[in-house]
Length: 240
Image (cartoon, rainbow, N blue to C red):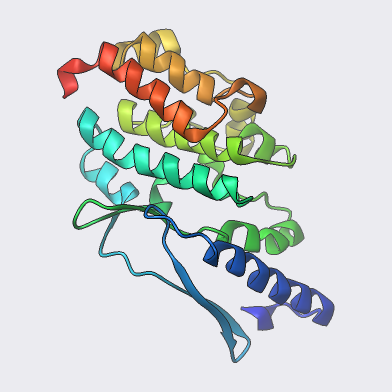
């Protein structure tokens, strides 16, 4: 709520950021992105009106079915990758890709939610000393507070893909400092966890998309997805 920001200048700055980022998100028109219809303010409460999706978040679906079939995995990941590349081509970075921000409609349509919301929250995150994004899905450059581009969304999408294939996230920790250390210095266990569960080919593709250095990742999310599908076709035909 804007009224919770006591400093008038800071409140005005936050209001302007809200409108600017919501307008940026509203300019995105893609089948895999939830449409932003309107941004407004009433009684010092800012709001964004978005497209309604009749379905469940991927988070709920993974809880019910931790290891979906190969075709179901790519039915989700392909449109998300395409939607992200579309947004990136227009200069918009999501910054908070995670299963709860991916919705699967009743008819199977996949939609990315909360475009622009992550960046809108940047001001509040800075005030409280928190970093933007959801810790388990944050890229190393996000954790370090460095500038980000579309490859940070690719990293987060790779975490989601890993979770869908393996049934768990690549980095687990009971405390935030431990998690941050693993994000910055740890490596997914390709030879153990990945090879045992999904095969070396898929493990190699996932680890490339999870590279600490953004330059070492795939140029685009769709290229990452193409490589992942080729690896899946070679090593996981028994899942089809």
